[in-house]
Image (tube, rainbow, N blue to C red; front, side, top):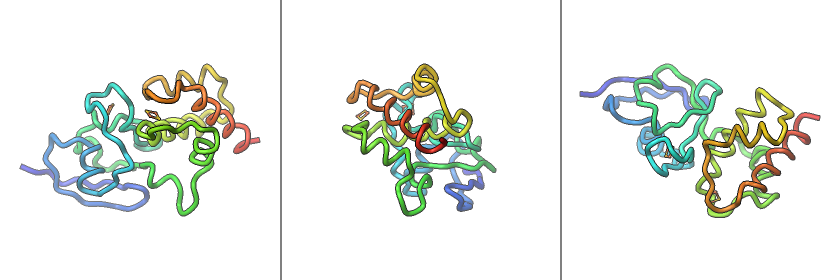
Length: 155
Ligand code: FES
Ligand code: FES
């Protein structure tokens, strides 16, 4: 049995027939070919599948497709139109990316933080990204990149 859902992904409306137990990350990657959203653990542990749902970061491997019905989703592909978004540039410039697997989720989490708290303190940045695991960078450069954006983008 399938259910019909309507989702707005990166500003585009999609009507999809999906199995009710299908997760949002699978719908994004497999139905909509938005493979920028990474699937790591598949069980809510790593944060690599983070996307924005109605402006808030969510773990898309824990969201069932019917729960996304009528919602607005932003993936890493939707963050920048043509040009990289300041956070994307900052991550590249500060060396906050190594294998890159955590990066889309990390950047979307950072975006959600900066949207509500344009000048976060370091502890607030660290706390915001606590659910996004990175096994390469040691986090310092990620925090630095987010901090640099907070200053340059909003001052
Ligand atoms: S893949 Fe979703 S939290 Fe790891
Ligand atoms: S850059 Fe490899 S997991 Fe973060």
